[in-house]
Structure formats: C-alpha cells, structure tokens
Image (cartoon, rainbow over all chains, first blue to last red):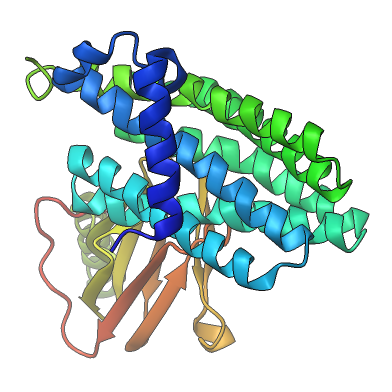
Length: 213
Length: 126
C-alpha cells in the first residue's frame, strides 16, 4: 500500500510535469512513452519525492509535531523502498538488497544532523555533516561498481551537493524561517535532476537493448 | 651417512611440498566483496582452511568479527580499496560472524567444521 503522503506528493509532481515537463526533467511529455525517457521520469520523480518527504519529516521533527513526523518518516521509507526497487529492476535482487540499507544510512545521518541542530549540539551536527560527505564516496563507489559509466568521484560530488541543499532546508526550518525553508526545498528538489538524469543516462548506456524503443 | 641421507631426504620433501604450494594452511575459498556485500554471505569450511577476501568495490571495507565472538578467535582486517585482499586461517571449529566496520549493514559468516580439509579446487587461492 502506498502511503497517503506519497500519493499526495506524486499527484503534485504529476500535475507539475503536465503543466511544465521541465520540472520533472522530461523535456517533452509525449517522449515519456519511450523506455529511456520513462526511466528518466521515474528516477526524477522518486528522487524529488525523496527531498519533499525528507523536508516534511525534518520540518515536523523540528516543529515538535510527533504524529506528523512519524507519518512523514514512514512515507520517506516507502520512497526509499521504491528507489531500491527501481535499482533492483535494472540490476537484480542482490543489488536492491545491497542498495536499500546503504540509502537508508544517509537518511539516518540527516536525522542525526536534525537532532544536532534541534538540541544545539554542534559536535553532533558537525559529525553528521562529515558522515554525509563521507557517505558520498560510499554511494559513488556503489553506483560506480554497478555501472562503469558513473565515475565514483562525480557521483560523490553530486551527493555532496544534495547534502548541502538539504542542510539548507534543515537550517531554515530550525530557524523557523518558512520562506527560506520552502525556497531551499525547491532548490534541493530541483537539484535531484542532476542525479536522476545522469543515472538514467548511464543505465541506458549500460543496457541499450533493455531501453531501446 | 644415514643421518645425512635422512636430513637430505627431509629437505627434499620440504622443497617439493613448498613447490606444490602445500603448507600447514590449506588453500581455500574466496569471498568477493562486491556492491557492499560479501559473496558468498555464508561460507562453510573445514578447520585449517585459509579463506581469502578480495575487494571489488572502490572503497575501503573491513572484515571484522562482531562483538560477542571470543577475542582470541576474533579478527579485524582492512581491505584498502579495489583489488585489496586479506586472508584468515580458521584453526578452531565454530561460527564466525563478521561485518564491515565502515558499513555495518554488510554482514557475513564463516562456519568452521571439525573435519578434514577439502581438497583445493580450481577457484581457490593459495
């Protein structure tokens, strides 16, 4: 069952893509009928959803809204599972099994950062940032091992940028500055296209027969 | 003369044994570390088997027994990036669960049985 939170986000993304396909990284809505474009659209949707749900979870946590935090965290994990399934659909069950705990790990570090900020524990917050940056190398190594078209260093840089944009969201939420927070969420979500598009392109390049037509 | 012969014969046997790669440790299987997993995840071997881990990932992993394994039976080895390898010889029967210290979700296990070592196979590493 898809979490209601995710359904809401998916509907918003779908509406946005119809009104402005560039929002979800699809240059032309009709081109989504090709398998490669479909993969690109799926990855963009899932990774942008990740940002929106993560921001919902951190915002609820920092606002002391416990029930909302639990709902958002649950939906965020549903999104993680869906991303893992997307990876598994290309690389098999073993890769999916390896991917999910690795992906969940970076969410754990983001939670650590949020807690550090909320409790004004600078050491905890700084450690979480360092963990997230180090995670970039891990994620880069994983994708590079799965797909030689994805250089480890390049992926690590993209993850680092994702970390920085999400940090901006959490910092703005902690300062109770909603205008800045939502501007940062838009930036963070928009950045995910820089991960989704190269990932999709690399997969298509690796498996041209699977994505032809 | 007899003593010299005996010593000479022993030296010859030792040389031949070394040339064939025989040692007190029996050459054994390989665990590949790939996509942040140990392959195979569970390995069953005989005592005195030497297990080799090779790293196919471009990142540092470790092969470290998890807390709960007796200290004298524990091991902690680092695989410094792609192509690195390490080996452990299992002298005592038992179960040896291990993990990567840097990526705790990576888990593996070596089960050591008290029996004669298997004959080396083509894929084994000396």
